[in-house]
Image 1: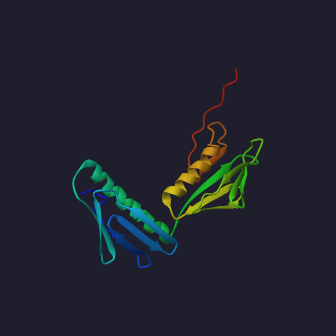
Image 2: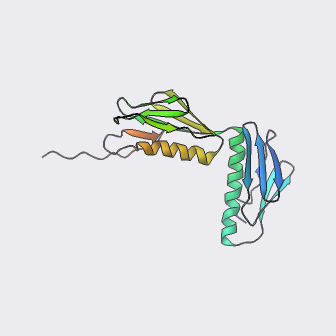
Image 3: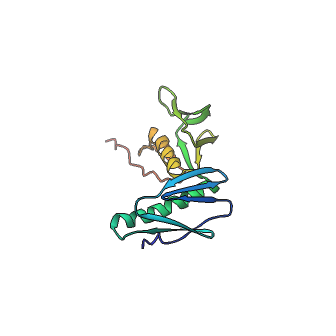
Length: 178
């Protein structure tokens, strides 16, 4: 069995799980999510544990076994606590703010950059140079944070741009003047 896939998923008391053939419905304090199990993976509910089993030992089914377990565990964690990613804006005069359903970034371009906030994601800007992306879907939170970072990646000479909090940006030496 897969190292990760064979571990049972403990179900907290505030989470309700319903199984229909290869569909797992998970309901929690922050909403409801459905997950379709990959082919070859079966789910069994025993007391407060969800156990995933696979029908064969094919390489791809083994890989999907661990994947399905990790994704269901992430859905449960997201519906209980939620996920968040923090980004910082580095640069003189660079800042961000939320206006309606858009994140407006002032990054030294000739125009402000409008980033539409997707459904299921909330963005907070507690300080002008700090952006917090929150949501129940770990994949979507990471994807939105990566899209915001891609608007102006940290450049290697001065380090200006948008980066994850705690991200190390390797700096290059400037051109030597002879």
